[in-house]
Amino acid sequence: MRIDFVGHATLLIRHVGLALLSDPWWSGPAYRDQWYPYPIPVPERYDLGAVDAVYISHSHEDHLHAPTLRELLKAAPDAEAIIPLRPETQMRDYLRRIGFRRIREVASGMPCVVRKGGTSMRLSLLTHVDDSLLAVEAGGEVLLNLNDALHSSRREIIAEYCRVLRGRFPRIDYLFCGFGGASYFPNCVHVSGKDDVAVARARERWFLQNFGLIAQLLQPGLAFPFAAHFVLPDERNWWISETRLRMEAPSTTLRSLAPEGLFYDLQPGDFVQDGVVHASGRPVRDLDSIRAEVLAHYSQPPARPAIDEAAFDDLVASIRERVGARPTPTSFDAIIVLSDFERRVIHVSGSTTGARVEALERAALDAQDPQVVMETRSDLVRSTLRSPFGKDLISIGYGAQFQVRSTADLDAAPHERILQLLAPSQPRWRQHLRERPWRTLRYLVGDPSMRYASAQLALRRTRPLEKRAVDKRAVTHPAPYELRDWVAVPES
Image 1: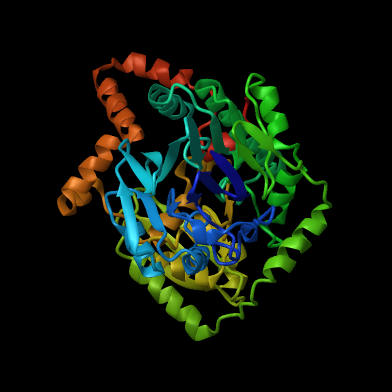
Image 2: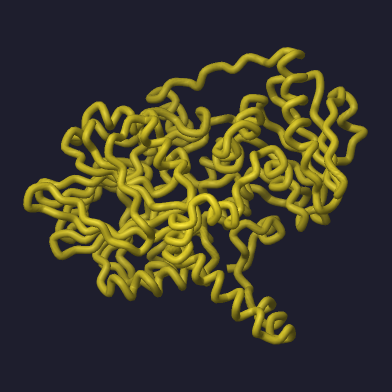
């Protein structure tokens, strides 16, 4: 087996004459010109026309990138898309619109085989809520591609998945796992007393600690940090990329956390074959030159003109239509400030009886004391209102800055509540079961995190209340997305 690192989360896995590509992203930025792949991928070095199948792990745009997939289909029009089976069919339908003629949905835990002539690869997928991971068996070797699926999870979930994986694959030759954050949280959420840079560094190290835990539990022959190779060149967010780029190489940190593992950093174009790593080493570059290189390669994002009064009023009306019908469990108060409209802001307040939306003069902002102020662009708000994936432009794409009023408001998570109010409601499991019972049941039974959650729920119901309180206090590591745990640098 030969594994080439093309860039970000893109691997080209070849065995004899069979070629499998994972999560391709190289044709331009993602998330409305907010994410740029770096180090810059090198697809031009490979014969993309020889690609037989494409594994797409989940629907985040840096893994499901339509411009890249369309470019790939020009070279390999018969390539088969391999995706995880989910209760809904959104990813499958989206890939059909892009142009894929062959799409295979694979149920979690069920193997499938990709063949070409007398050559084959055995693939096994495991879902993890909205994500998935992939095992590839070929030529007597096993590759495990975790992408984003585990390193940002709670550690009990990591342990459960590693237990399942170790049971299925006692020997893992190659482990590829994400090593950094792919969410606006907590870097774009600000509150008095929070040291943004210190917390960002601690969170990156926390992800690496999780990678080290995964490596200790799975004991791979070789392990490679990947799937976090991107930068945010926007001036408001460049500090986030700068913080990560100033840190030591991921493999260096990983060796200090799990010294028995064999960790290597790969640059685009590096490869691994028959247990031998062909790595070029991490180049030393000035941070300003990195930003300039990325923008020169992909060109500057297009200028977005300010919206006019009519467009602002229409946006307020759209928010009022969406939010007004949604009561909130407790009182809620937020201000939306648009970077492309200066004169007025949008005030969203809510209670158990419903929500209210009004436009205020920006000069009146100082007289308000909302739980959260969200600074963003009008097009991102409109996309959040219209599409199930629109919220990703903000929650994954770093498309907003959130100023939370005080630490007393942290438990209410007002930064998440405003996005939940704006975004379309997602179907509940009951609706999935009613509309697609067979698909939903196959997903629920096959997903280890769902099985684990069900087992824990059943256990809690039979456990005395005193014991539950003790167990809750025993959890000392920070929760992945609990803001109170990421206001200060958490303990390791």
